[in-house]
Image (cartoon, rainbow, N blue to C red; front, side):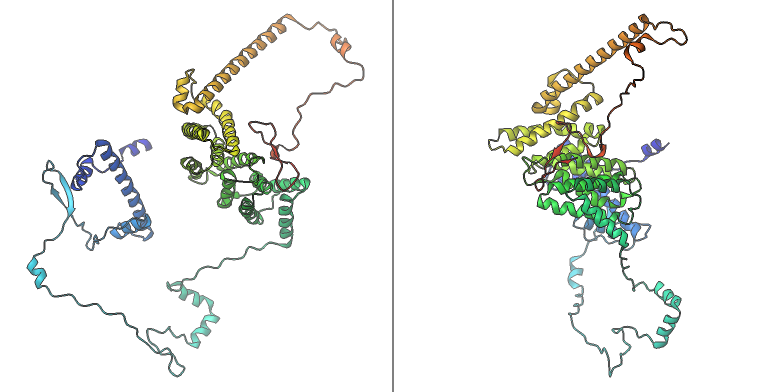
Length: 528
């Protein structure tokens, strides 16, 4: 029923004839149909947005009918010059419908201007001259007493002050109806107890300190402690300000530690981080899209920080997009905006590409596939440049690694892969088309070989199970295999998988199994 009701709602558009008439009146007679269609859609969209904003002003003013002042306010809010001369005093529109001459008798709307006689305008009396600006004085006090005039404030007697102090409800009822005496509510300070202050100091120093054991214990405490509700605003502020300061100082190690603190807060199920997304998201996005994160970008592994921050960003979008409307669209819009600017370095494009790929299969199909071709064209242009820096070469290799990791698998999952090379060149360009074509064919061959090997293993197991049968054993008789391979009193060890020591601190990289880096200001390896 909802779909049928929505289908019945008419969609209003500007008629093409009106746009054509306006173009003809402005001496633009040679407009194509596509141009008129584009102008019609553009004008319809602008007017629709203005009407929506004007409706907001109407509701805010608690009116049931929209007036011209609401529309002018909407135009001012969108930095448009308001139309002057349309003040409706009696509610009637100052327009009239007439038939245009020479336009196949089309009906047009025009302003209903009254015709004025020239002799009446000449003989009409002149308007009054407006008053000049003047300064007027008044008595503030006469012999120590304040006169009761309009310019002076109201005098409150001593009896009224006494009654207000003795009966507070009386003063409250007076202020209730005094609309002019509005005061801004003062903010209450958020104080912490002594134990909470000590814990906050110890936990922040341990998280960004030089001792790895204390750092791991502090991260584990942040991810499991259930009594961090009072300290959570301070910790989030510490992360946000820490990212700002260390981005300016190119301190890669501290940025990694701050991102690990963010991950620990997200893993803590007892914390409610939705109120602090306006501080966490800018810090994470800065670590993804920053032009430079360390003092030596060509040698330090700042790529691990970008990958780790991108995964945390995708995790936050999945966690809070159901409660916050448009969160995913805003984050995706920031990533896509970086590809539209050619002035940004390739390092920023790498961060945006990783951020989009971490969003999942749907984001890769809808957003990453269309940007591979222009990204490849820019890489080709940079290769043609003779002054290509070593940092750009490393960035191009990293971008190729990300595309090789995510795109072939997503393409095989979403579409039926084609064997034609021209199809890939047409969709992904001449740079990435042959690469993706070869990788997808290789994945297909690997899947076929693995499926054939698994079928052969199943046939071998079924044939061996039908031919070899275990011998019949009498009660109390041991099997010959056990007697030959196991000594009396021996214990056969069980094969169990070895678990990692700390899986939350490890991350797989497309080119290496474990990503480690050595910060510029320390001699320890930081493992994400």
